[in-house]
Structures are given as C-alpha cells and as structure tokens.
Image (cartoon, rainbow, N blue to C red; front, side, top):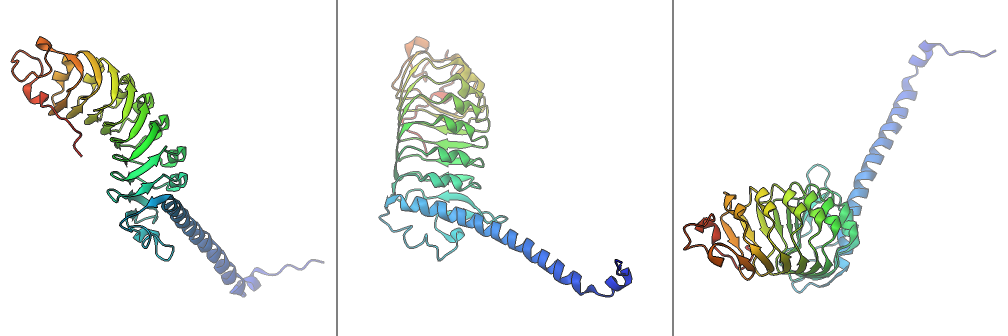
Length: 295
C-alpha cells in the first residue's frame, strides 16, 4: 500500500528546496554568462579576422593593441555599447592601412558606425556585410575598393550616411539605394560610375548632401531632383550630363552650394554660370561652383 507523506512533513524539511533553487539560479546565470561571453567572442573573432587581412600597418596601430589579452572594448578604434558590451562603432580612419575587408566583419551585428576612410583598403565588399542591419554611418571613402557598388546596400534601412567617394567603383548607381529612406548624405564622387541617376534615388527625401562628381554619368539631370527639398549641397560636376539644367533646382530653398562644372549642360543663354544673369530662376547664391567634395 502506497504511503503518502503528509504536507506537514514536507514543510518541515525545507532542505530540498534551497539546493534545487540554487541549482536553477546557477544554471540560469551560467547560460546568461555564456551567451554574453559568446557574443564578445564573436566580436573579437570578427575584428581579429579583419586584422589578419591587413597587410600594411606602418604606424603599428593594431599589432600591439588588438590582442586577446585585453578586452575588445579597449582596442583602438573600437567602441562598445554600455548595455550589451557589444561593438557599436569601428573607426580606423586615416591610419594608412592596407588590406581587404574580411567577411567576418558582418558578424558585428550591433555595429552602427563603420568608418575606414582614407586608407588603402582594396578588393570588393563581402556580401556578409548585409548582416549589419543597425548600420547608420558608413564611410569607405578614399580607398581602393573596386567592382560595382553592391545592390545589397539597399538593405541598410537605418543608414543615414554613405560615403564611397574616391575609390575605383564601376557600373551603375544601384536603384536599390532608393530604399534608404533615412539617408541624409550620399557621396559617390571620384569613381568610375556610369549610366544615369536612377529615379529611385529621389525617393530619399531626407537627403541633404548629394555628391556624384568626377564620374562618367550620362543623360540629363532628372526633374525629380526637385523632390529633394532638404538638399543643401549638390555636386554633379565632372560628368557627361547634357540638356537643360532643371529649373526646379531653383526651388530648392535649402541649397547653398552647387557644382555643375565640366558637363554639357545648357541654361539661360547657354551658360552654366548664372551669376550675371539676373533673369535666371536660379539664385546666384545657389550657383557657387565647387570642384571637390568637402569632407
């Protein structure tokens, strides 16, 4: 016959409960600690993979500093978030580094700022970068990247700034850039980009700076450029645009700097310089010519 233990007896023996609870809490803490450690390890591995593909570090910035003996959050150029202690920013600008971009860089899933401008990085960009869905600031300017500008750049829905100027990119401007509804600055000048300006780009209503100077762009300047009402700097100089300068540019009241030099454009009296033309719909203040992209 089965004997049931009275509840009063169980309550009189509380020694079973504390070890059980202790074990449960210890296991939970271990899982949390393991996940946190694993995340930090992922970020560390991603950065060490990038370091391994840097072939020239003349000022020895990374060699002694990027080491497993120190926290990744203390590495030069690295910033971590205070909450998750994940890498949120990587800034290696103007270090005279030479190398290629590791595909593992895409594992920095908390990265919001990636700035490696003014170095000598080369090659194409790995598709694994599409994993950087938190990215707001991307500056690859003044390097030696080549190939076409990836269409998958259009997946960075939070991106506010994209600078790819002074590289060796070829091909068309991807129409997918029109998906970047929060984009405020687009700098593609000084490449070998061809084709026309895709109309999808004019869906980026937050654009304040559009710089496409010194490429091989052709066709006319679309009248849809008038949709960019927040635009304050426009540089289309050094291309092969032709036709009339759209009068809608004169309606862009925030525009303070414009460059249209070295094209085949026509305006009032077939002139690109309207400073002496008082009848022009384009204010003289809007037609101050710029010959290079301001950093």
